[in-house]
Amino acid sequence: MAEPEIELQKAIYDALKASAGVMALVHDVYDDTRLSDAQKTAGAPYGAADGYVSFGPESTVPDDYDCIALDEITVQLDIWSRKVGRLHCKQICRAVRDALKDVELDLPTHGHLTTDLVLQRILPDPDEAITHGVMQFTAHIEERE
Image 1: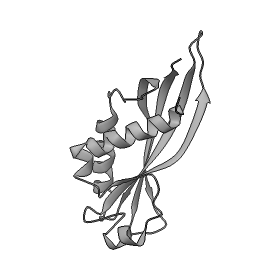
Image 2: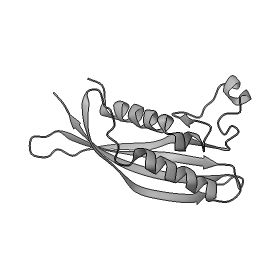
Image 3: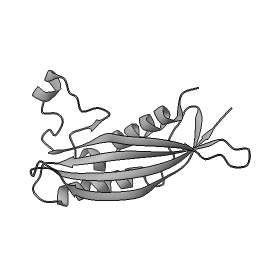
Image 4: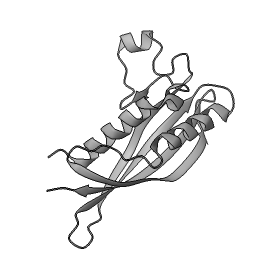
């Protein structure tokens, strides 16, 4: 049985990549932004869209309830924009939110109960040319036997 965190990350990644709304606003979705020279030459991570999404910190807390083994997994998605102002970053955040709202994520060996947006922030970045969005989603995942 795969780890629920791995299955959840793949399902979120797949949902974002399948979202026309998200992909119209960003160059790509990244698990890791340490890029190869070929990726950098191709314009990554920002690309022509001047934006991207990356996975950030994550935490897992067991949340068992009446003989049901649950995990509460909080995943942070970081939104990055090089366009002037906050509008583009906010548009990406909305598209990500829409892509994950009320979606039943496909987890091969676990049951997905809910994924809820619990925090969204737009932050100034130390690099003044970048706007940084932070979105935290909490998912409740049931262990199947």
